[in-house]
Amino acid sequence: MKYSILALAFSLATISGAFGQSTTDFFTKADAFFRANVSNGRVHYRAIKENPSDLNELLEEAQHISVSKANANEYQAFYINGYNLLVIKGVVDNYPLRSPLDVGGFFDGKKYEIGGKKTTLNDIENKLLRAKFPEEARFHFVLVCGGLGCPPIIAEAYLPATLDAQLDRQTRLALNDPQFIQLNKNKVKVSQIFEWYKGDFKQNGQGLIDFINKYKAEPLPEKTKVSYYPYDWTLNEAK
Image (tube, rainbow, N blue to C red; front, side, top):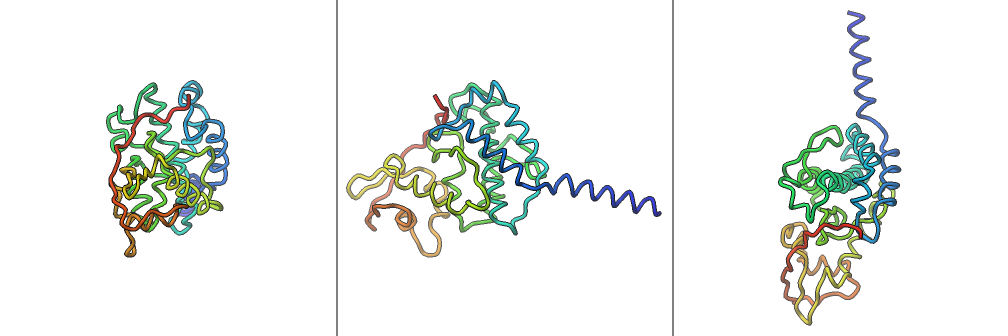
């Protein structure tokens, strides 16, 4: 009996160690990876394909990290970085390709292990992030799907200590980009992101224009007519 108790304690300690790693090392390595492989909002997929060891090592480490919603900044930063890294992994594994949509089940079929669970890219976005933090519409400006229609990927990791400022910065960059928000007199064309996730941008009595104007340097008129331009799924590859 005494031996069984000791064995159980050792087993639990081992499990706790495997899935209780600090995220510090992960964030440091992720930051170095993005800085080395992202330029001007695009990814050097060919170079990563030729030498995938840093990406694979980083994602292997992410498999054994446990984060809690209670520490919201750490949790969100971990899964935002994880999503962007797994998109890159999905592209690299199928490279060369013109678009992530060329790969069947790219977002909703292929399962990856991250944070101690197996999940798809869609489930990271919709179940692990949006569902747990429904008030946070800024996710849409930092989760990068691999297409040019997405807001650009940044050459740094999202970090718990700077996450709010990073979310705010990327949202402002997108909503002040004349290609992302295309204004012509009293008509505006916006990304289909606003159509697909319209509920995220219409909360607490605010409308879509209210959300955009919260971050836009030159606010849109209240009665601006909104339409949506087609999403560009062309791969966001660095030339």
